[in-house]
Image 1: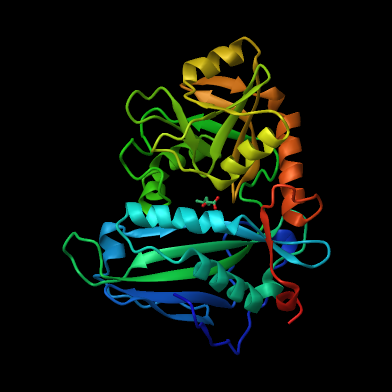
Image 2: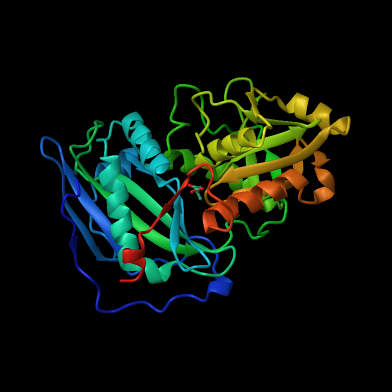
Length: 362
Ligand code: COI
């Protein structure tokens, strides 16, 4: 795919936003990576070019039938000024799983990582330094063929864009409030729930809008058949600590296989606290809450990191969690994960890829 990447640098660099006021996904760097796919030929013409709007045929399949998938990962600035990526190979593996589900061509995972490192080498000054900030990386693939028949496209483009970010939620690392969604569903088994594809997010907007109007940051999705079992939250996977046991909904084909989710399960196992992956019903959660056994609830995600949940609303029944205060385990996981990402704690699970110092000093 990227045996040779051509680089065309911009001659008008943007003014960088103030790090203190960075929100999520509002600013974009000076350059982006693009490569093209043509059926029968494969990926070609890999290039780093100035960040700019793109031109597509109005009949491009992505606009009509939603053939598009994406990823999300972050580059962090360590105290020694090095730039670190958290498990990037996992993102490109998942991108390939999503591509397969949407009948889109596979990428070469090693080439994709090399392309990302090249782009970061060009954009290294954009990795912010302030605590709680990072450079969010958004790889995505779109179907570009102009055709109104419903069929997999024969041409695609793979992009990587970069965005300096602060916290995803306005609450920062303070507990958020979640509304349990009873009307709409996010995904069903056999659907596209486990793929990171645009349609999953578009179909979630309606519920999200209703939740926001009631003062809730996110919705918690239940299974699409019985509306009984907890699946995930808008932009993250969900964990519960009930009577000392850490539990998360099992991967079932409709839940997104989060990389932070997987990392938290591995980290807790490393600490000798195995996580139970199983079905969790809302009834079970409500009972645990009523009997005082629901100790902590937290979400996990690249954008969200570890996000404590302070309140759940299920059909009007309000469940306060840990008096709305961040729990000990949520705090310990947040601190450990961010320290590993920033190089402040030994990376004993070998999760971090450092941008080589030859890149950083160029
Ligand atoms: C991420 O955590 O990277 C995500 O993709 C969630 C996103 C929809 C903001």
